[in-house]
Structures are given as C-alpha cells and as structure tokens.
Length: 420
Image 1 (cartoon, rainbow, N blue to C red):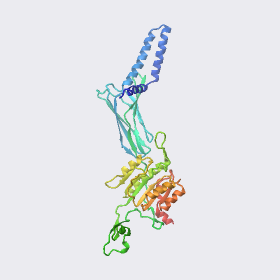
Image 2: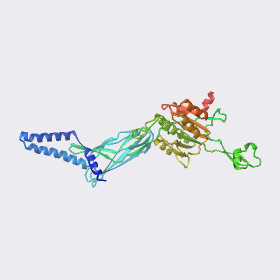
Image 3: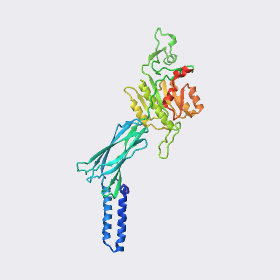
Image 4: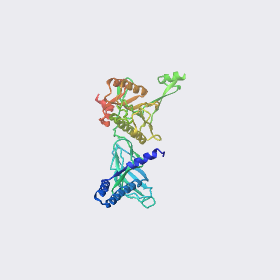
C-alpha cells in the first residue's frame, strides 16, 4: 500500500464508525456535565464527564479494532439456477484477529435479479487462538433475471458491549450466481419451407433428417446422363456425376440477433446496456428453440450475430448446458461476427427490429441456407419484410409480450397448408 493510500484507508475506516442513540446521549450528558461543573461549583461533575467520554472513546476503539481481520467464504448450492429456482447461499466466517468478535448484525448485498432474505445475527467468535473462531450461516435466494449476478460483499454492523458505537464493515469479494434464461417448452411442428419455384410447401417433421446431401464423384460406365454434375465437370475437367448420401443426423443453426440498433438499446452513462424487452424476448426464444432442437436429436449450431456465442452442440462437442450458460450472460454486440461456421440447410433466426439495410445483410449472410425460419419484431417496416419475403424466408412477427410457444406454433406449415 502506498503512502497516499494509507491515510485514505484510515479516513474511510473512521467514517464507518457511527454513534448509537445511547452513545449520542452519553456525549450530550458529558458536555452538559462539563459546562455545569464550574457553574454549579461541583468538580465531581468533571469526573462524570471524563467517565462518559472515556466510555465512548473506548467503545469506538473496540469496534474499530474488532472484526478487523476475518476471512469470508461464500458458496451456492446450486451455483447455476433457472429463473425462479431456489438456491442456498452458505457463508463461512473465520476470525483471524486475536480479539474476539461479539454478536453482530449481518446482511449480504444482493443485486437486481436476485431475491432472498439475506440478513440475520452473526454469532460471537473467539479470538484466533480460541476454539470457536469460525461460524457459518446460510440463507435462501432465487434468481429472477438471467445473468451472472455478483452476491456480496458481506456487511456486518459491529456493536460495542455498551451499545454506544457500531462500525459498518464490508467483508469479502462478491461471488457470482448464474441465472439461466427462461426456457419455454415447444411442441413438435413441421416448419413450412419453400420450393424451388417459390411456392410454399410443408417441410419434413425433422428438417434435414433424411434429405439428400449432394456431392460429386467421377463418372462411371452406366451412370445416367441426367445425373451429370455440370458445375463439377467444368471445374475438374472430367465427367462428374451427382452422388447422394443420406444425412443420418439432422442439423440446424439457431442465430440470435444482438445488434443494439435492432434491439432498441444503447449504453447508459455507466456503460451498461439499457434494458430491452425485445432482446430479452429474443434470448428466451433462442434458448427455447435450441433446447427443443437438441431434445429432438439435432446437431445444433448456436451463434450470435456478434462474437459472443459460437457453440456446436453435439455428442462429444459442446453441451446444451454450455449453450444456456452463454445465453445467460449474452449482451448486445455492436460488431458482427467476421468468421462464421458454414451455414446449415436450415436456420432459425431470431431478429429484432430490422431496417432495409439490416434485412439485406441477413439475406446475404444466409444466401446459401436452403430454409430460413425467422422471428422478426412486429415494428419492422414493410420494405424490410419485402426483402425477407423476396429471399423466400418464412417470417413470424412478434411483440415482446407475445408467448414464445404461440409464435413458434405459427411456423407450423402443416396447419397452414391444410387450411389453404
């Protein structure tokens, strides 16, 4: 610690010492006794003044030195929770000082997004050479908003034995509790795809499952001429034909739009992103779709428009828990991702409020994707929607208060096709 930091620390410690109403009364009586002693010719009142002031000073010294060296350990069970799920925080305090620690009031600092009854009475502890140098307590809490929430530091109000002075301590560094995004149960649907002539058609129940991957191989005698792959033939300089391989595992991409302009948010004066109901809806929808696809057996590529999220959820790769942890802490991102995974044949895109330019950006970005199913903010202008329609996207518009499962059901091409 530098010489400049030492006085600052002492001033901060001194300012944390507070008189109780009883302590204020002792000081008032002491001052009155000091003034009355010569006026009433009663020198004994000076002894009363000295006694009262000495008690206040000693009490201040006690709370200033006491609880000065403790170790705080905080843990959560579980460490990662869903919204509304209960967790239990356990705090262990070890007295490292030679002086004992008296009974005191404690409270743990809870951020927005965490609720709980985080206050109580801290039992007394002996000095570091005693037998009872450690105490522990626990309390329940709940996560109400997704995110990585720092819990702490621990605040302890240390009262002297006479009840004249207390000191407000802050101990330990905050520990983080992760709250996952809300995940909505989605029912199986048959998303409506697009045929080569632009007409809508019901896509298979599992988009990508059982469809043919077309690759090229060298021409063999007996191959039908209609199977010639002219582009590969021109590229290789020899006859190539189409060979179809069955895709055994369905694959799909889920992409979250994190552009702050699309999501209607900006940083405040502290550099924190302002709350966006649209963005939170998009995160819930992205989490729900990802969990639904993984449960249905898909290899799922989860991405954000920026560099924050890049997950390949498959056996031996990333897990759905990894994906949910990323979505728990994702924030708007001002820059788009420059390096992308090769696009899948099916993509679920969860977008905000699009401008025409932003709609063109997404259409260009997913130009090689066969089927794109998108959620778009209801405030998106018609010109931007025309861009998506021209690219043969299947679009469902939403409002932040809409139910995610109801919006998902609108993608059901089976019902739409039957109604038509």
